[in-house]
Image (cartoon, rainbow, N blue to C red):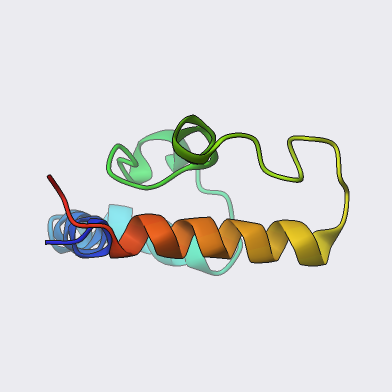
Length: 89
């Protein structure tokens, strides 16, 4: 199983277990709103975050102070893709 599959399954499981109010807040989040429950809406423990990326792959261009959106976006996507395709050990 890949990290990508684990992340998707985790998010899907959380969505499936939401009650109506939490799902409403989740839809608001997708629409750019910041619900009051933002801190507890989605458990991100299995999501590949910036801090995880830095631990695994080192500082990115953005963290090194290079402020070029094209470079950092490409670098972030490349690292996320590399992580996502990796098999869980």
